[in-house]
Length: 313
Image 1 (cartoon, rainbow, N blue to C red):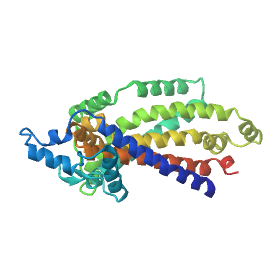
Image 2: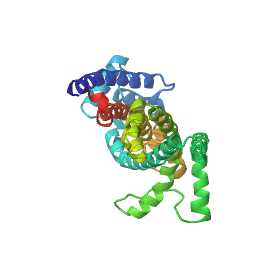
Image 3: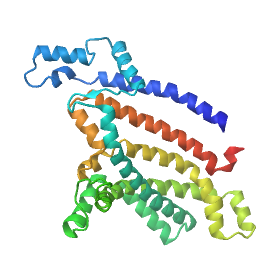
């Protein structure tokens, strides 16, 4: 496992380097002049010249990239010219909100999706199987923004049980925080649960027909031991990868869901930055998201060794 970990870590550095080139390069292809936009309506030539110098827009592409990458290596992602705050500080402010929303959504997705997938596979051809597949189809077909609006109409407008929007820090009021986050977390978790259900069902059906599962049943083991200990543990291998990728997607910010529920996370941050041409914020958030994806993939690979004993041989 040590050698495998070393190889994976060695492959991360060139991957991250390619990601930085891609992020910075694509950013330069956006139409318009950032200095002119940031100069405001007056577009004073002196202000524009100052912004060009500050943003290194008067330098060739390799020089601009070197300036930016040098700052990234030192932990400096630049400064938001609109908000006048370091990008790192903005990310640190929004990250706890997005992490909480992502964790709650993944917990909902894992509980519902894996449970429904296992039940559907074990009880294949029964009413439970058909019900689980209908749920998966519904989850995959329902737009997040529509489901969010329907939940607001039901639980906020009609029943008055939950707040329609807004965010409260858990350190200020944990109960109010959970009340505000449960609906957006369910909206996001519902779609991921549908995907997890389909993959879990497929993996479980394949594993349940394997020789070692038939051997375990022939030994007289109880069915729940066969399903949970022998079948599910091996079926989780593809689910780990899927879960890691979906969690990475959540960390990048659920734009529509955060807009519907007015959650001040990564989604709102990146949307505001794009509309305001705040390049430093866009680059910083995208770089953080890409790094999170790569890290989660590495953790998923390492989790294989813990879940599947055959991979440790």
